[in-house]
Length: 428
View 1 (cartoon, rainbow, N blue to C red):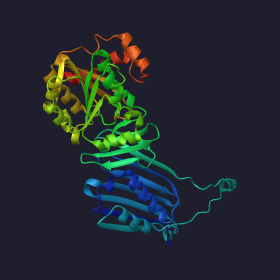
View 2: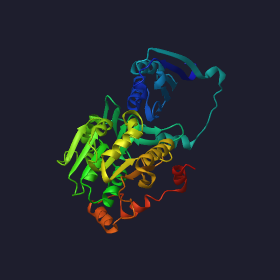
View 3: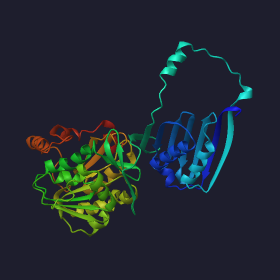
View 4: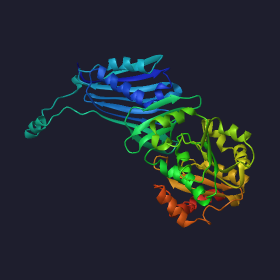
């Protein structure tokens, strides 16, 4: 060999778009390709970028294998660099071409550090070299695989253990569950974080206990979405509840949560629950007038099957189906991450419920981009969300239910909006 290293620059065309968007599959393919070529693996680091694309590198003792994918173009760019002659990068090339189901691959090999152009210098490290030699150990392989939820300007990355616990593509969306290092098991839909075991209580306690503490006479509740079961769990803590109807469009979300997220889905078999697998938009359009005391819109972001849950027509049906004095709570996006959706939904709700009956409040959820998330409390000429708050009742509920986020002080404080959010909602 007349060079220090071999560097192969690779382009794969006509790949499987689905494969190119799968972090665990790409990571395992790259690791296997390195092993088969004879490399000694040191570490792997991989990120997914929502909605499309994966970047990653496998660091080997002999250098590295790196990749970036563009699933929307069915294209992947790969960089294979090996030092010495103990590793054959062309073995990796062939394995990756097959793993990505590429229709065509092209590559160019460069010799890096051509020996005839280099002059070797004797370096005498003396005792330092002897000490280092005595400390040499076999490198321990470490994995660093990341899930990334992002838009064009902001991203949140969460490290997980590399292998998915669950993945299924339903007729509506791709449902996955990852085991993360910091937040436990995490449910994602179409590469967006829905909830995690460690911080889900901030979301579910705030969307449920805010209306139920203020309105102790609620007996009949409708939940649209909420297939993980967290909202139903919190509702059914309240003994006065007589019936909960949950309409979830995707049974895969329910099945995955029942299997892997029992701390959230524990109430999905409660006899007070009427579980319906159907389109929530259609269900409400066909539902009788003035049927529910509380309607909870526990939806994902306004894309895919949830897009219609952010429309004026849908919220007119919500209003119609609420009893006089009834309440609706809804997740209403992040004022920082989804500013346009946040403002548009608030305007839509004010046009239907009237401005004096629409209130925005906040919770802080680390696994959601920016950490700041909003909810909307809307009444059909019903109770204000804070004025009639019974502090003693709020404290007792928080204590009896062992709530982790909600308390009487948080209840009031959540409706105190930062100036920039208030200005957004006022149209300034």
